[in-house]
Length: 156
Image: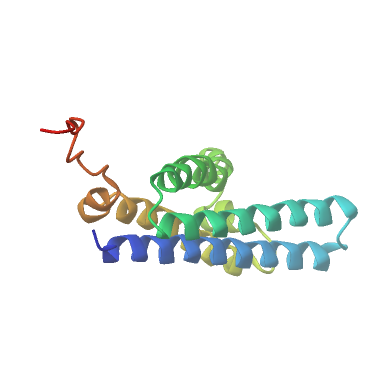
């Protein structure tokens, strides 16, 4: 079966999510640098995040090539765990009365940049997940029916 546009679009949306995450991280690091510098722990966290983003990009490429397991890995790692990492703390802040933009963007000078990047990140994850499990993508990733489930008989 030819790869449907939904799979290509989902891969592009996943890539958009990664790019938005990188932009968000750059805003946060810029904010930290303005507030007093970046320590060794921050550099370590950035290196870990960079490694994760590289691994996710490889996973996106594997997904786009039609591997079913990569679709489920993206769903579990990014649609569940990654999305939770983007919304749990802001949701807690919202429950404590923090304004929406501040909960998702912080309270520094670069708050709007962080907010916009995070909203784009969340939207891309949600859309990628939906498109990745659309009917055409489901048909593409469905196991092909076994055409000859009976062994051939010799000499028949």
